Amino acid sequence: MRVDSDILVIGSGFGGALVATVLSQLRYQVTVVDKASHPRFTIGESSTPLADRTLKRIASRFKLDWLAPLCSYGTAQDLRPHVTVGLKRGFSYFQHTAHADFQPRQDRSTELLIAASTADHIADTHWLRSTTDNYIAAKLVDAGGKLIDNFRVHQIDRSDNWSVSGCIASDAEPTQNPSSVELTARFLIDASGPGSVFARDFIRGDDTSQLKTHTAAIYGHFSELQDWNDLYVQAGGDDRPHPYVSHRAAVHHLIDEGWVWQLGFDNGVTSCGIVLDRNSLSANPLANGSGEDLWQRILRRYPTLQKQFADARLVAPSRLVVRDRLQFLRSVGAGSQWLALPSAMGFVDPLHSTGIAHTLAAVEKIAEMFSRCSQDDPFPSHRFLQAYADQVRSELLWIDELVSMCYAARFDFSLFAAATLTYFVVVTAAEKDERDGFLSVNHRELLASVGSVAQRVRDLRKKHASGVASPSEIRETVVWIRKTMAPFNQVGLMDPQKQNLYQHTAPPDKTA
Ligand SMILES: Cc1cc2nc3c(=O)[nH]c(=O)nc-3n(C[C@H](O)[C@H](O)[C@H](O)COP(=O)(O)OP(=O)(O)OC[C@H]3O[C@@H](n4cnc5c(N)ncnc54)[C@H](O)[C@@H]3O)c2cc1C
Image (cartoon, helix red, strand yellow):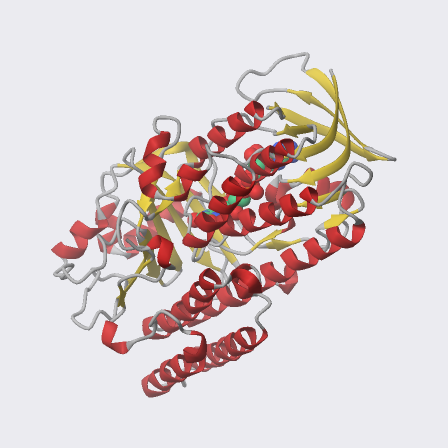
């Protein structure tokens, strides 16, 4: 088989499929190949107000009526049974102590709840990616795009055009004679994530060492996980002042090793993962034993979590996924007649769920670039492509600054809360005014203030490691962070009166 297209996209995750759909709407002939076939298990499920706003703009600008319902929990119900989501009212954080039951406190010093919206119907969602990606990929085909599943790339060549040779071979149905495929295209988009074959052949440099965050993860989908809020109440917690039921959110359980995520879906399945902070662990916990062993060993250290998982069953994939360093950063993100989506250029971390929003922001940028092209110049110029890649790279480095600051603060929950709320000051500023780029990355004063907060947090962590960070110094730092971020704090975050419970932070269209 031979397929000639204007644009070839490698990877049909929601990012690749959506950018391809938009480009099809712009009358390009687009082919998307993926090594897997939909529906398939994948990770990266917790959406955010920023993601929803971008999705809404893309849907409206490119007349993708079928996309708009994904923007909030209420409208996403209209997409059943094709799409399964979960209710995400905000971000919940709970501090656990090893070998002790979770201890709710009257002053809320072991919890932090940040509501993004005021009601369920306008809330954000967790995307069950097997269903959302399948839905978007099907719409790509409706829009005239071509999707080739189970495609194994053999070779990518570049002359005037791109030519990619490969074959169609399914893991599920192995065959002796897989059919070979020759693809040609004038422009190539790499949307294939960390294991990109395009990067393997065409990008020499690797800048991962520039990233400060260093984490690994073990994860899977579980059924029969006990509702966290029931355990919270059983432990003596008073949930009445909570802005939402605490597990109807992206739940983060902080533990010595890192943190545990829990994202619930409406079909009774919960995405769970343990993120290991390699900067704070002397040895690599993944070095010995299986992922399952390590999972059990960690749960055993935290009795309330162990209780929560007592009846839980792994339902997808068949084994827990184990990933050593999650971070990567490629030195180049675009070139003559090609570009990469963020997920193929670099990745920082699941903490605070930046990935979906970042991917959508890039899809929007790409769509705008291509919509300005003409019949005479059908593809963005090298200058525009370079500007795109520089921007995405600076966004990845900015996410790394914000996220690594939160990891550095983990040794004390009040400091972690201050660092996390610094992140949310940034997010809410970006939600109110997106002219400064993704997460306000081009807002110089904001960057400088966060930079000084991050530095102070790191200095304090060093002192803590050598045993000389006193509780009063931590308290003073928290107060100093509040003052430093005050000029940018538009929604009343870091208010001691609120006792770590924030009723809502999203901009007006996310409030009832
Ligand atoms: C552990 C973890 C947790 C995360 N949690 C969150 C979260 O809660 N919220 C959030 O916003 N983000 C999260 N992210 C980030 C999120 O996963 C990404 O931002 C998102 O998946 C990017 O989507 P994408 O479609 O661009 O790429 P991907 O989802 O990575 O899709 C890539 C596609 O390319 C295909 N592919 C790969 N190699 C090849 C090949 N050689 N040939 C053809 N096809 C290929 C794959 O099959 C896949 O379909 C998380 C990431 C990780 C690693």
